[in-house]
Length: 216
Image (cartoon, rainbow, N blue to C red; front, side, top):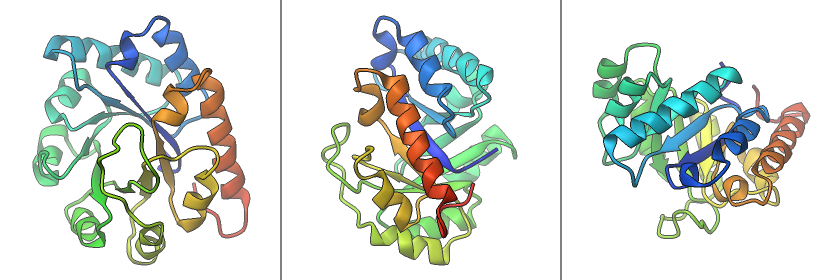
């Protein structure tokens, strides 16, 4: 399993659009590292059905499925892991509920202290951001790209970056030290989400091949 690459984030609103199954299959089949699902608007049973569909697509393309915020939904759906925010279940409780093989990621915003604590508690990756103006979360606190350089020096975990990342700025984020690029709008609001995902995958692959680039 690679914690390096493009990390698209979809939600239940996108999954209500016509043709979403084919679009999601193209995105996951683009060679992404992982897919995250945010169930924000539907009821519990609807979210479980949607997560089950995503899991089928991810299994077809051998990509892990991560559930945002919801440890219970992760356990019920059989997804590969959970991404926790600051207000969510703690890492130790999530690990106890999901088992030793579950992937657990943690949002750290712009805080190395939070990232170090997450590492000590057994997180599998940490996420920093937002780094650029975000359509999905415009109210999110900004973070400096320098935090990625500092994290690279002091952490032993894979590092994800999120917030306004697109094909025009992805190189800057990768050069600063990110392993995973979490992307929402630049993929799922594109006219062709599959092509957008493939383009970002190619940018990441070129960065990995470059001297000193992120390692898969």
